[in-house]
Amino acid sequence: MLKIAFQGVRGAYSEEAVEKLFNEDVEFVPLHSFDNVFDAVAEGRADRGVIPIENSLTGSIHRNYDLLLKHNLWIMGETKVRIIHNLIVNKGVRFEDIRRIYSHPQGLSQCEKFLSKFPEIENIPAYDTAGSVKMIKGENMLDAAAIASKQSAFYYDMIILEEGIEDIDENYTRFLMLSKSKEISKNANKTSMVFSTENVPGILFKSLSVFALREINLLKIESRPVHGKPWEYFFYLDIEENPNNERGINAINHLKEIATYLKILGCYPKG
Amino acid sequence: MLKIAFQGVRGAYSEEAVEKLFNEDVEFVPLHSFDNVFDAVAEGRADRGVIPIENSLTGSIHRNYDLLLKHNLWIMGETKVRIIHNLIVNKGVRFEDIRRIYSHPQGLSQCEKFLSKFPEIENIPAYDTAGSVKMIKGENMLDAAAIASKQSAFYYDMIILEEGIEDIDENYTRFLMLSKSKEISKNANKTSMVFSTENVPGILFKSLSVFALREINLLKIESRPVHGKPWEYFFYLDIEENPNNERGINAINHLKEIATYLKILGCYPKG
Image (cartoon, rainbow over all chains, first blue to last red; front, top):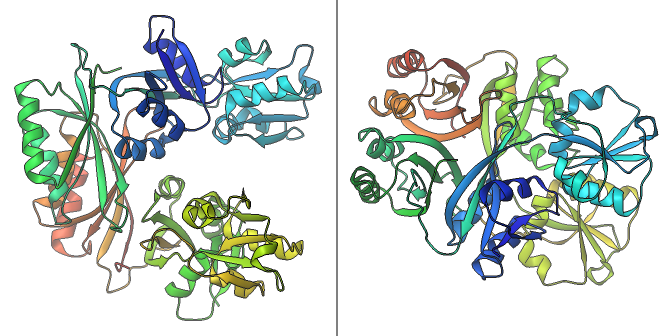
């Protein structure tokens, strides 16, 4: 059985991503931080890591972009999970018993409209969503609720009082599957990379030209600071192309001529 | 006297940015959140707002990019502040008395090397840096220290035990000055804007061409999600050009032909 590392406790949204990415039974390896997930895969304590990289409302998870640069792991796949927030309580707790609601700050802010209807209930930020469920279960709190996934309610044998309490429906998180070895599935059609350049005018335009002039679609661009060089940036690109296609190979060789640093982060089927 | 709103308490790093941006005496208006700063300027309770937009180690402050889009404020100026972290205590407290160190999580993480030398001292994340100084002063804690600015030690009449304890020297934060009215100083040479496009291949390359082909230097690009349209983005650009120059006017008119949405966020002297 493959060991799959992810950040959070059992029932985290990442666990749903794991279930979507693997058709077989796997062993879940819940870890405290994203750093721990990268370390576990790099050191062979897990076969794969699954990390969130981007949410359709709150944007990129920048820490994970930085960790992709720092580590030498390979992106093997991706999947998108619809985030549905639920109000979860211990058995027997009724809505009128609730005095406090716990969740990750993003969980709370994504349910602002729902929560604002109950100003007398205190909202308490917690380390993570499913972790809040685990806590109110562990301490048998009868006056508290958590905002978290359906899976977490199921896993900790809790009750969902209200389903889908998030403000905006279009709430998706994109997750990446990481491995230590550079395996490329035969239906791979997306490539991720990071590069930096000299700081000269027009250089980003020139860099993007290697794809645009070959009609290769750019799916995402993200910039992150270069440490020690204030106001210079690493650029992360996702392109729609298998790098084994001649067009893709030529484009990446062309980018190598322009960039001072280039690393391919992975090649995988578009999720 | 101009009223200047900023996030944090007196002694925050933002206060140093205020001092660099204004040569005259001003009235400081410390507020709880970035949202509060935008609201105060929009509603006329402050004449200007000063917000951090980017740190050279940790990257963009994305919340403030989102607020620039949401509000109709105008960027009038910018400045860069070298972030120097100090270990600050109440009078009479010696290093060997310290059991706990408080700061904003970024303050703690930027002093990791220093802190790792004292594993017996507990590190406690707090809401902000100068706020930690205010707290240990207010509660007269004699076994605690805070990591914060020199200004905060001065303002709360505290002692700096160690100066410059951050791991990396190249730690700068760039701040923006916001106003309600669209004033442009005559030495303005930088323009900030945000735009979105249709989701078609090559569109970002085409958008950047309006500047590159006119030899206008692109200083920064940042992307943020469009709410309700998963995996589509707003692009924020900083260019080195006064939009009153014909070349600049032409470039922006050209971008209007390509973009589905374009807003100029400000025009100001490069800091």
